[in-house]
Image 1 (tube, rainbow over the protein chains, first blue to last red):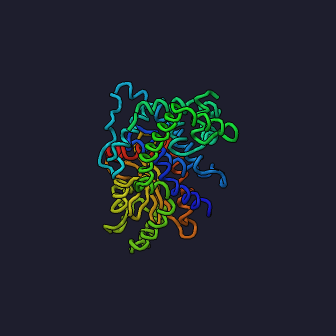
Image 2: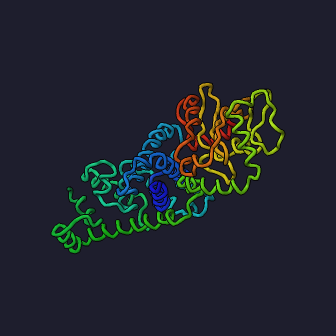
Image 3: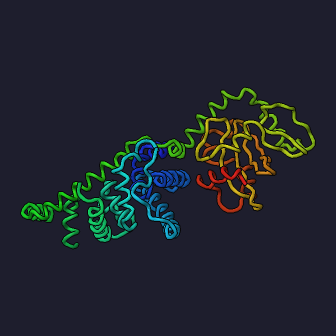
Length: 163
Length: 231
């Protein structure tokens, strides 16, 4: 009886980080919040599959990443018929976050990275996971993570430029 | 590990011992490499500044609500107990219906009654009708009724499960109204907050199982169905 509430307490404490991760993966703040909500809903439904004592953050990030991959696939098909996202997309009146042009600019640059580089840049540079933790989360060899990180961060630096 | 990978692993604090010391010395003696390190450190600082604003912002209510269905349910049930003085009547009606005695009988006229009999069929009314029409499971409101699953039956008709203080049931669209397809009494003691959140009443679960086609709607599908007037 006590396990579920404590799972939820931990889940609630992790919401800010999950939301940050979603923003680094998604093309707009609205997509990011949809992804966060879908992740939370799936996590609640699957809470019995989480092993208490293991890292809940990694488990949740993995759920979010898999959902994002699924939606990204369907989005690719859709985007073939749409204009690419412009830098202003996602800037709107949604409570402060979106008013940050800097965030919109960085999110747009992240969007131009291939998915497999973006998730590595996000987990390691933004979310602060170590190489090994990120490799385990993504089920990849550590060398693959390391080389994707080099390509992703180099491309990102060229896009966002110096300030 | 390529030279680039080694350099960035050093930058990220992933190298140890001699390897780390070696790279530190190399960067110190190579202004070009030092400049690259600085540019990447500056970029990471920008990333962190921008995205940390997201983490520092308040969590939107639908996300918070999705994360705590049990806590919310408990709070709502407490509110429901305070808000519905006519609760024993609904409990009585529900019990009557479960016994199958409603066919052909006239329920007492009461504008607060959550169900109405019309032409021998049972329809949602008052709060229950409103909750079925407007509430989203993904964005629960403060009302006394909680919406559970929304799904389509084999005809493609939208059905929704609901739980009030005294009863739980299933309603499906029927000619622009919510026709109650099953109503089960939620007896005290066998339906604590935790159990109601963790699992559905077994009678209702069996009814849903025999009615539902495919998967229950997710939050986006539920919202879209509401926008289409549950058609």
